[in-house]
Image (cartoon, rainbow, N blue to C red; front, side, top):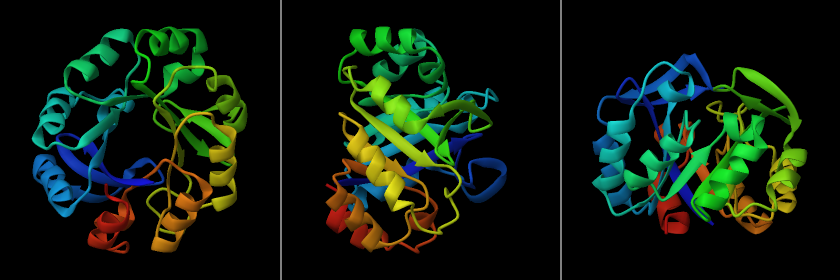
Length: 237
């Protein structure tokens, strides 16, 4: 299993939110490029980038994502506001290895299938969940679809993976819902990544044992609750 630090972008900064809520910004670092290089130098071989402004239709950090994708040799997965084929192609041209699609891919399965078949092995689908239901529009609306039903729908597609984030736990450092994580891992034919609330090395090891392909780390690693050097040594490569 791979652990990837999240570099969430808001107004050109690297931030961390609590519960996916913009008003709950707890970390704000002025230089995302420096932070990306720090994670790479520490031993993390994968970086997870999210354009929060684009996800919330408040702006665009596209040029910064291009710079981040080229700042280190790390594998880069990135998303946020990817809602048309042109945005997917821009991400690919920028050097993003795995392009993360959320809202439109969930609401318009035919469009997602078309994109996935045009770019096999390049697209990840983000399923942000609260109480078992998938959220859309930057975590502000419920899609009414259960995460397991969504995974069943995604299984035939040539995806690079799926990412399930427990938004209710994100940024709270209260631990993961391991039962739901296991259900996601078991319910997906694709490499499954888990995010939201991961706080301890034991939780990372439990996810690895359950068969997760990766874990995205946010608040706990920025706050030092998870020791980043130890995480990188065990799960960085």
